[in-house]
Length: 130
Image (cartoon, rainbow, N blue to C red; front, side, top):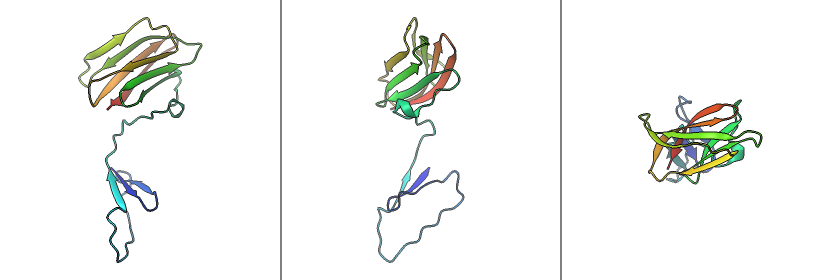
C-alpha cells in the first residue's frame, strides 16, 4: 500500500514506514492524498528497465498481457513454459531457437510463472498478467 501526495509527488510505502505526517491548512482539498494498492509482482513494461541476471535472460510483461523473453544475440531460447498459480502448465513452447520470444495470454488478470530455458541457462520469473 502506497500513500501518494499529489501536491508534492512524494510516495510513502506504508509497509515500510510506521508513520506519515501531513500538515493541513484550513482549506479542504480531497485530491491531495491518494492511496494506491500496488502488487509486489508489478513488472516493468520497458525492456531496458528489466535487468538480466547471471543467466542473461530477461522476462517481463508488455501491454499487460504479452510475455516477452529476451536474451543476448549469442544465446538462443530453447523452451518457454508458463504455469498457473497451482503449478499447472498453461502453455509450453519448444524449439524456439531465437534470442527473443513473445507470447500473448488472454486469460484475464492472474499471476503466472514463466520458465525460460536457453543454451546458457534457465530463468524462472513470476509475472502479473492484466
